[in-house]
Length: 129
Image 1 (tube, rainbow, N blue to C red):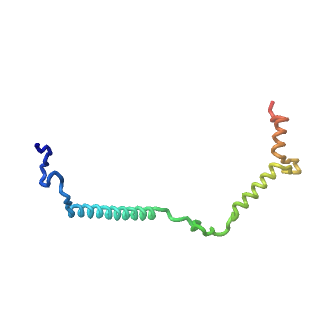
Image 2 (image 1 turned 180 degrees about the vertical axis):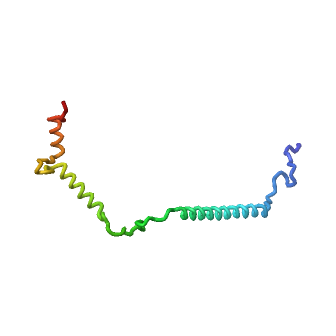
Image 3 (image 1 turned 60 degrees about the horizontal axis):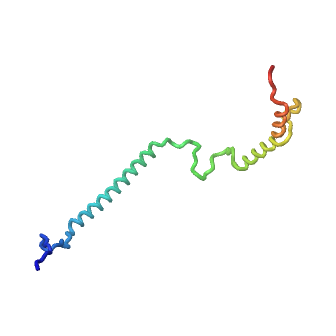
């Protein structure tokens, strides 16, 4: 019987050799690492340059600027914002829901907003003839 298997043209009987040249691989890895390190250094230098330029171009701080956490100079006009807002809202609510004098001599009063709306619906708006 005739041998029907094909022989490859290679010297090792049909397969490639397992030899890898280490020098080109090592030089490629070394070159890639050098490019990465140089890129990192370049980017870091660029960031520092841009940061320095931004700091130089900032306008000087105003005379009333204070560091975070430090209170501004005297006089402090509003110390308790939440408390002041609560007092303001309570005063507004009292004026919207109660009766009181605006000018007693002139006979001007304020009335609850719900009552004012009801009177407006009953009487309508004044008109000119």
